[in-house]
Image (cartoon, rainbow over all chains, first blue to last red; front, side, top):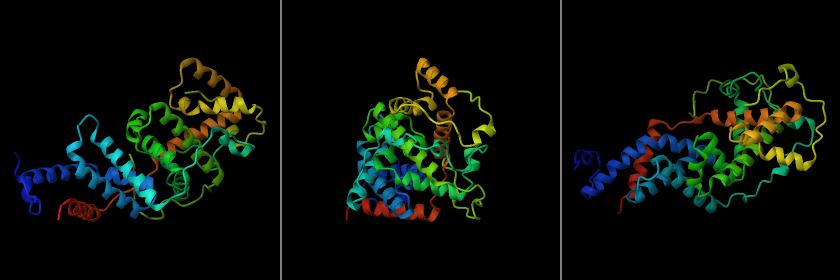
Length: 213
Length: 100
């Protein structure tokens, strides 16, 4: 039985409580950055993301005893965060979720087939030095109906497999892929419609951004 | 993935060829594009689509732009928490978790 961890906690009420707190500290230390990144991508702004992270870890703390270890810890946390996110959104009465149909993504004019943004000949990292492009991408993702945003963020930004995304959001793999495809088409269309100049200065001296992967 | 046969300068100019698919054909192609760029299409379908893309500059542009979109999403940077924020949030969570 470990007892040293209990000394770091402010007056634990029991040995079990100390053990839970020590496990929590490890869980928090290893996953808080990942959950904050996920929350920021879902919520789009820092304060809402912090609320979501706190809610996620609070629920994880309370439910740690129910974690059976048959999934990765991170997948378990993503699922808690996803549920917390829909509860918080319901309270805030966001825009109603709409279905995206494939037909709406068929280009209707010549200019819609390609992105009107400066990416040709650049790696994605180089293209994303352009602050205007980063902001346009954030806006496009923020405009996605939330169930599509959730799948796109988990699969294309957090890097989960389609199967893992399915276990987080409670869908089969086929449904995940269908939703992901529509989400990608939506973001593509938004970026194609925005038209961004190539000469926008990069970072503007702001050091706050870090690589997501 | 499909090897593109068009030159860079040809790709940079907006295509002047009209897109002549019927709507049904367009949807059928459109439906497969994520599976195509994720390398998840069965061989025969992949080959069929690749042939079509080679012959249809507009569709080829479209696939390239979808691939670029996914790559941008995969590399979009995310902000990080400061040490102070991390510590403050940990304390807030533990305070909320403890029974009074």
